[in-house]
Length: 151
Image (cartoon, rainbow, N blue to C red; front, side, top):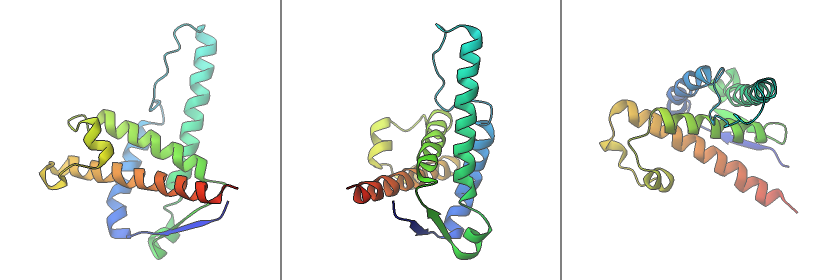
């Protein structure tokens, strides 16, 4: 896979990173998509959930590591074969958390189509919705690039 370098506006993205970091902190101990594993014995269920949580945390760390000092200096992040799977999963986890914790008032169809009047949203909801769109765009960029790179 090729390397993708994405230039972003630091002034636009920095406030969104605050939203992502806050949610990532909450997701350190909670799965974004809780699993229904009651049929498993307690030991196996706990081990399974611990592994899922560990993987989710690694994915979130990879996402947040993109926004390092270089990003704040240059305004660029680099996506490559070593981090794209992690970034896609981390974006999905944060989007799920945003959807279930902050954006319940927006119907699913409007969310996915982007057919939301942002100016009509309350300030706090506006920021989380823009973050949701930002993460969706990152996922789309990666997936689009992966399709172009496939033989």
